[in-house]
Image (tube, rainbow, N blue to C red; front, side, top):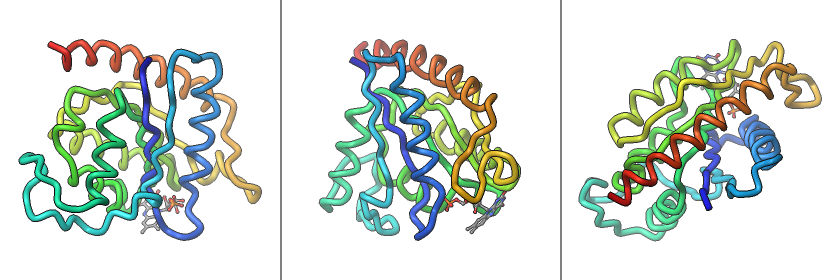
Length: 186
Ligand SMILES: Cc1cc2nc3c(=O)[nH]c(=O)nc-3n(C[C@H](O)[C@H](O)[C@H](O)COP(=O)(O)O)c2cc1C
């Protein structure tokens, strides 16, 4: 059974990230009983700014917070990166969490759900570059939620087409996650 981690990449008080992550999870679990979707909220992992003495490529982790994060990522076959746009990129928390690990990311697939004033697209494009270095393959279709049209005073209210785009992204992600699981076994 495939396992997909939905990574919530913001940690600040009052953040929109959890609402977006819950929406992704709710859409994802519908009609996909053979897949496990797990929310990985970076706020729950409490990662400090990278404090491991050895580079992640050496796989020698000293601290319990690194082991907990490594175990969570290692058990996943693919990921949905739920990312805010902060100053034309992803969040520092997301980049830091990626930097913590190396082999745990390898030969896995990713989809992206960004949000920001106009969709947060620059966060996704930045993530694609970063993730290529740790051998994570990003699928083409991505969701971009706009603060103007997909959120309201009551919270996240995605325009109707966003759900269809998310479904397409998830289908691509599961196809690539399945294909890459065979690469990891070879
Ligand atoms: C430090 C910071 C920088 C931001 N920079 C951008 C930006 O460059 N482009 C954009 O569209 N929105 C930007 N925003 C707006 C955020 O995308 C928006 O507030 C979003 O809700 C942040 O995610 P969060 O609520 O999960 O923290 C920025 C917000 C913060 C806090």
